Image (cartoon, rainbow, N blue to C red; front, side, top):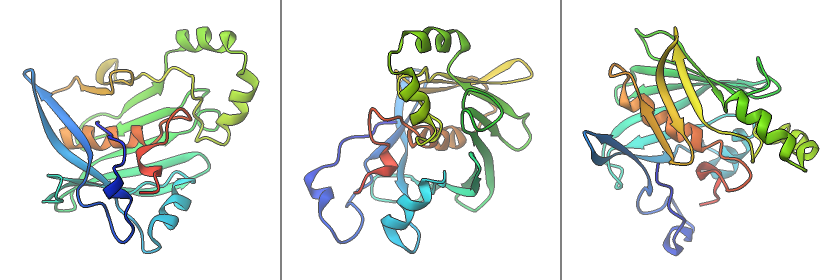
Amino acid sequence: MRIPPAKLKDLEPGGPPPVVRNVVDLEESRTLRSVAYVERQLPSGGLPAYLAARKTGARSFILWGDENRGGVVATVVTLSARDGVATYQVLGAGGEVIGTVVREKALRGRGIRTRWTVTQPGLPEAVGYKGRIFWWLVCWPLSPLLPFLFLGALFNNGDIPRAPRRIRWRAGGRLLLDYRPFRERLELSAPELDWRLGAALVALLHSYDGWLRTPWDARKV
């Protein structure tokens, strides 16, 4: 997902930016093409209401077919967000269910790592954990700020900014999805996976970027 910095023209008040600038690219057979342009779907209370709701884990996105908002590819809605667990549903242009994504915060969910569960109708549930245990064991002892990072995780959606971030989703031992954050790339290892679900998952993952940069959907423009 390409998330360019805001331009001066996007800072002008009075409505949404003229074009959607957050882009999800799809690579097939070494050919790269833009498939979705991601934008927040603001509630009736506008941006302040959205930013307040996202603190609980709520998210609401539209994936457009082009930068001029031509045609809806998919939407992401929040089914529930409480007690460290957020459930999102990805819907197609006609309202059909493409898939469901559940995020459980580290230290508050079912383990010490953030857990992501992805389900597509007709396919087994795929479960992935943020970071490999090995790299967590390497990262934690080397950090002089470890106590502060643990404390900060409680107020930052369970994320530690210097922690390992790679996520691999498996179902029955089979690798279905592989998120490589340093390359900002999500690999769909199973051909039966809907690329729209993958695009929505990328947008959700980037909405949980740590302290080192502001998540794209938390911007004030």
